[in-house]
Every structure is written in C-alpha cells, then in structure tokens.
Length: 366
Image (cartoon, rainbow, N blue to C red; front, side, top):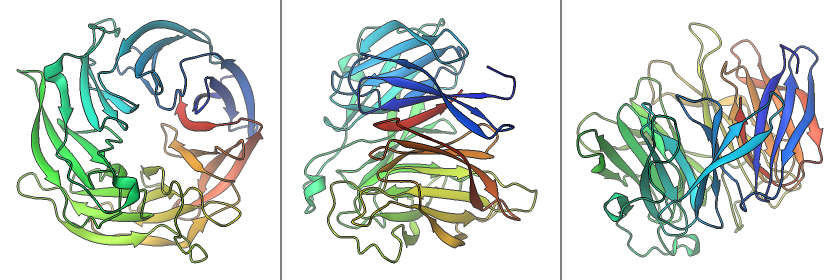
C-alpha cells in the first residue's frame, strides 16, 4: 500500500466485508481483501474513537455487535469480541466520544440500547441490562411502511443523542446522563412530518442550529430547527426525487445523507442525499447547498441531481478531508469515488470506479 492510497472498508447485505484501495494521485480504485463467512449482513461499520484499529460491525440477522481488529494496511480483519445488542435488527450504532458506551438503534424491534465498553475498547458486558433498553412511543400510522416502530440511526451531537424512527414518524432527542449512565428523553420531534414520511437518517448543521432529515418513504428532505430549549419546528421541505421520478410505490426510498464542509472560507456546505429503487433505469443523488451561518438557507444546486452510478444507492460517505465521496450501487455491484469540483465545490466529478462488488451498503474510510 503506497503512502497516497486510502483504505476503505465496505460492509454488505451478504456475509462479507470487503476492502478497496483508492489512490487519488493515480486515480485508481482497486480491490483489497475480503473477510468472508461473517455474521449475516454486516451493514454498518464504525471505528472506535480511542482505538482506531478496532472496527465495530453489526450482525443484523443474528442481533449481534462484533468487534474486529484491523491487522493489515490492505484491510484484513480479525474477530476479537461479540455481544448481543438487546434488540432485533441492530441497524446503526455510535460510540460515545470518551469510548465508554456504544448506543445501538434497532429496526425490527424499534428500540435503542446501550452497551458498556472497557478502556481497551472491548465489551464490558455480553448484553445490555433491561434498564438500558429504550422503547419509543409508537402509535399506529396509515402508511404500510409504518406498521411498527423502526429506529434507524444514532447521531451524537453536543452531549445529545438523536434517533430517527421511520415507523413512528418522529425523532427522539435524548441527553446522555454521565452520572446515571442512561439516556434521558428531552423531546420527541414530530413537527412537520407528514404521514408516510419515514425519517431514516439525519445530519446536524455545524453550528447546531438545524437538522436535515432524510425521509426514506416519502423521498423528501426536511429542515428543522434544533433549539437549545423549546420544541423543534419544521422550516422547509424539499423533494429528493428528480423530475422524471413520479414517486410511485417502491419497497425502499431515500437512503443516505451527508453534509460536507465548504471548500473555501466563504463557501457553502454541500448536502448530498441518495435515492433508491426508482422506477427509472438508474437512481440518483440529490444535491443541495447550505449556508455556513444560516442553517435554514438550503438551496438545490444548479445540477440538482447526479445519476450514472447504478441502482440502489445506499452507501454514501465522505473521506476525512471532505474532498472525496464514495458511492456504491448495491444492486449494480459498482463502487464509484467522486471528487468535489466547481468553483464552490458543489459538484461531483468521477475519479475512479470499480465493478463486481455485490451487495455493498456502507463504506468506512480508514
């Protein structure tokens, strides 16, 4: 592995985690190694904030959280620990900044749980205790995708933990209590969500003033205030679907949302969301810009959408610099790396692509 190469791990909807090597100087993307026969559907990957050689993955089917050690520069993984998550369908998780706990969102059981970690980064318990499993307040909804609670993501922000619930059509806003080591519910954010929206993932403006929510079912981006006190309010609503997509029924919809920093001091933030399972031949990324100072100032970019990647755009993630973005088309078996371009960095230009990587749903830049 050369000094210019970047290692990227790729989680899947199969039973493997692949690695690829991206070289921005040579503009190449090459396969590394594959870890096979893992617990089924390692569909989310994160690194421990204090122990960067530890990679956390879910085993979605078996309700497990697994820790692997990264043992080589080309992406070899060694399993070192495993724990039960205390719910069904562990979909997303995040480790507190001090490395003491991992918070897990479960899609099937519609619950969240908290698992303690040791100073060495490994599990301090084999499963969460009952008092650290959190159920939301679900009430029946009309849309067929909202037949039950479906907690979908864990976002850490300034001592708070935000968890969107696709089934309940709301976002839970928790505060982490450092004394009791538990989650305290601050608010259930519901304003502006329409029946059948299905909030899946979100990002927070760098100044903490606003939330940007990807609504999977409706294919909509909603912008909400995030006040330090008082209820959150809807500010704006945008369709993520391109003009030639009529929004007809589909099994899934919007998937990922990322917010990239400006490329110059006075530039705008770059907000990217992905669409899945369009009735058209390909899916698209929806492109927006956001003011650095006014989180309510959201605009669609001049291009508006980007296609040509493939079907089922679930994996979208930026590198640490915010300069490169990897997108994977799960059903096409294609991975593409883009570089930000244009005067304000609000465009994406393809740098490299790799074919034949089936079922990729999450990238982790190492």
